[in-house]
Image (cartoon, rainbow, N blue to C red; front, side, top):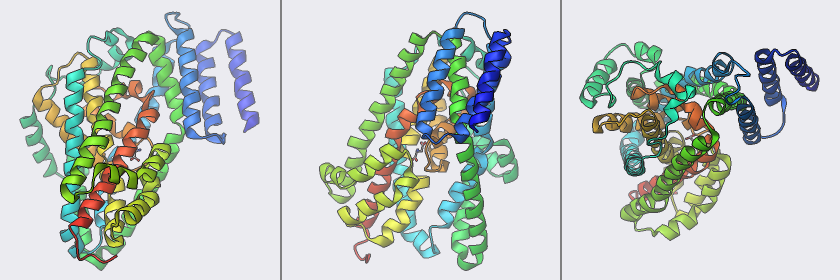
Length: 452
Ligand code: ASP
């Protein structure tokens, strides 16, 4: 591997010397990809390196016409975004049907299941509402002038014809109902998220109710779900290269100060919203349903929150979350073993909040003031995609593309958000894990007879 990297760098140098800068860029990108696939340093560091290289290259290229940015940098970034988009539909179908099908027996599904799902939906809805209120108040991205740049203009031209305020809610709902009742393979093939979520829920409930007879199908779904997660894992290993290309493209066409200013405003809104949800809304929900005080609660789950922050993965945090709720909050094993694994894939407050803010932010950059109806579409799609997102690092980076496209915004705009995704993933994962723990507590308090 070291030899290939050295050869790639040598080739890049020769091509620069010969003045073949476009080819040099591609040779360097391929070399960086080999480095990422073989290096032992953590993905976070690799992404930081990709960002740094992208910034450096973007600054060198900025306004200098050294490279044909649109023909070499842009396609590399787009390939990465297409890779992410490729697996969204199967991921959501398998993740939700697997989560619901493995909820256990039909009896369990009816009793604890309905309460768990209800609370998951409630906390996620509160999160999205917080996000939408905050982003509408602060309006990050307003009058940013970012649309002047080729990075954004190039994408906006590819948008499908839309009304200026985004889709109409009534029309959206009616179309969704028709789509739900059409062949599910059609929805899968065309990546229509709400019908996919609906089919996944039906499939999951049917399999759970079938008990032993559905076992083989549940195992198959489990296997495919694992395989899709595995493939996404490979693709995410190439994220540093995608970030290198996207950041390079962005910075070579948009002044750095402008990017930093607007991304900082966006990050502050995401942080503020997530913090409010995690420190005020969720503890209040817990207190309302169980009487446990916010301080007691946060102290009981602080270890899980720390692990969520460092791993950016609800799934990886699951063992710690389970220990915290069982040992510190007295949640019986039969409740935690059911509520928490389901929550690690289904319940994503932080992710839903992030997606909603991102959609309105990107719309604002494009000068589109989303109508209330369009924001309700954002609300629904953010909830649905957060439910379908797996509890792994950067899952929200993938699903936010669907939310953007649901209101007619170009999915490519995710390139702008990607630069800070790893950073924001830490806090949204904390909110996701906290939501799971609180729902487990609420369900447990409602089950006084439950034995540990
Ligand atoms: N990393 C998050 C989680 O595991 C998902 C996301 O990327 O939003 O909960």
